[in-house]
Image (cartoon, rainbow, N blue to C red; front, side):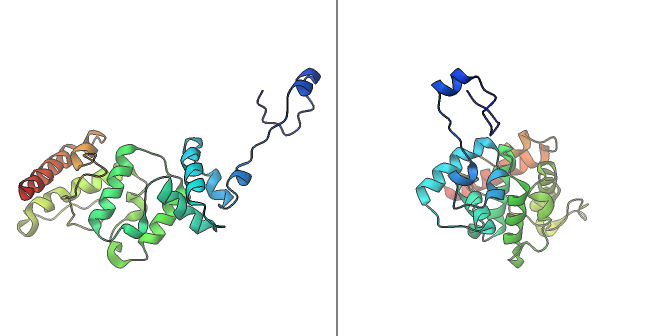
Length: 209
């Protein structure tokens, strides 16, 4: 029998005699991690966290270090490996394509780490990281400039923010064709993004021949 109550005195006597009391507390299971970060996770993410915690055996981690540990080992996001715009685009495509919920406090830490570099100063990260529809709109806005580059036909009506030039020519992620074509099937905004994905991967295949 499972009970949310800490006081089991209200249970029938025969059950108390026949059974034994077991209690589980996340703060005890993940003693080396920051408790506020752990409880922010969905229950379905705890198995992956437990496996990573057991395998890597981190020492005592503070709040920020715990956030980075969870980002890396539970959500497969390694901020230190994001060195150029295409790296970030790859991470965001995978994140929004999967539709996986990531706690706000982890998004905030991710953005804080990205902001340590000037590379993304003109990116509206606070919107793109957490807002799926805004991210796909962001891609779609930059599709004409990707095609025209220096010979743009007119000014871009920029709704989401900079930058204008964008690295659509990214490679597949973990063997999945997480191109803009894949993303477009998950978005109401997607026709232009879908074409961008086809063009970029066709170009990449021709270059690899």
